[in-house]
Image (cartoon, rainbow, N blue to C red; front, top):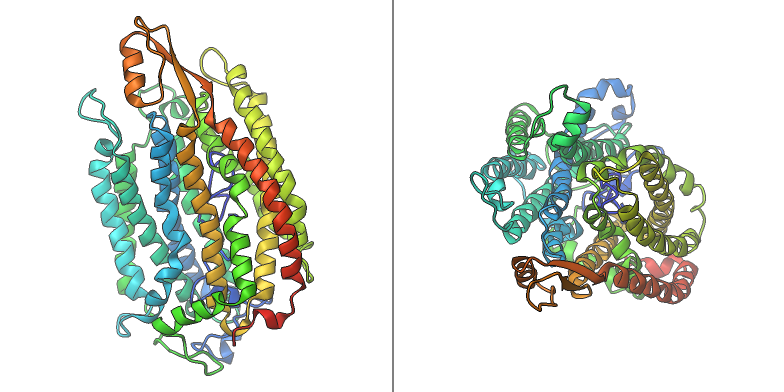
Length: 546
């Protein structure tokens, strides 16, 4: 699912990645060959590739397949983590929030992969393999993209030869990382489907574990580990006896390394790992949906009045958290926190993120799982005010040398941990409700549709929130040799600087947006509580399209 231990507190709602990519999303990584068909005992509800003998034996007999799945998900997490690290690198280069909003579009492929998931599931070479037909080209393309990016990334980030500096090419970076995320989403679709046939029916439940663990490890390597090892300050403090001006790892070297890993391992998978013969029916004799049938089924599901209401619920639910989730981290960087420290704050919270779904799921059973959602919602909104206070406090506690006292990080971690409780309460309850109402006859398509709508409900508020920060921020020029009072654009800021003045913020758009979104969230709650109770009262027949 859009795993959200995959994002550091820079994005208070982890983006899942993806888990997840965006973590507050429905059915993370659930696609046409869907994983939600797994039963509670870990068996698949239908996989025509295995017979009864597949129930025998221990998990050790399939360790090679489990290890391969785990590694494929690790590979998937690396470009996701790197894409989430780029806004931190760009923020240190003083790009505008409108440019950050533009780059946020790079995360959209995982939100709309339903648009091409039926194609990936239906078009393939039987001779080469149903899943390898897409997985191998996608991973080769990611590897080649890493090679190309390694030789151009410094230029794209505005680092010219020698000491020359230019403006980062945000548009090109957005295109490159959008393409990488598109390829990673395509690889995700293929691996999700392959997992159901690579493992025996007795052990197919381990597929979701491989997904969660592997993608998280890959994300951490592409994000937290990279940012730490790329930082000269971190390496000099903790890993070196003799300080140097650069970190142990450089961005271009990191990209080259993973490009080699992708090319070598993909070649090994293509040559050494063989798929079982592709089938078009499940064990109940039902044919897999073709391309047009899959799109037609999704349209039929969406035409149900109950589903349309639920989609409106999901696509608007996160408006109240848009600023807290997507702008707070940027403001902490502006206040002086180092990007590697911001990323590392996700590590102590990871155990909480593992335990929370297990604990919360005990309270989301029964017919009214959304009750937990509505109980947690106002607390999550009010924590936005706490984030505002933390941002202002950050300026006050910063030491003269630019560091922060230990108690500051303790407070940040505690607040972030509390926020995760409210986030996971929303996440687990919404997943439980969607799983309860989905028509089992078309469970894969049903949950994929709801997953797509929920992910879009995370993506569009993030882009809008980032885009509006600059428009709502008011600055004036102080100390200029000539009368010049405006600092509303980069041109104004350059003129102010040329006249030996400095731009000071009069009104921060972050504060305006935060208050507005919180107020909007409470208004949404008044509407959604009534609609949510109505949705939970509907009979199961209201959700069936077959």
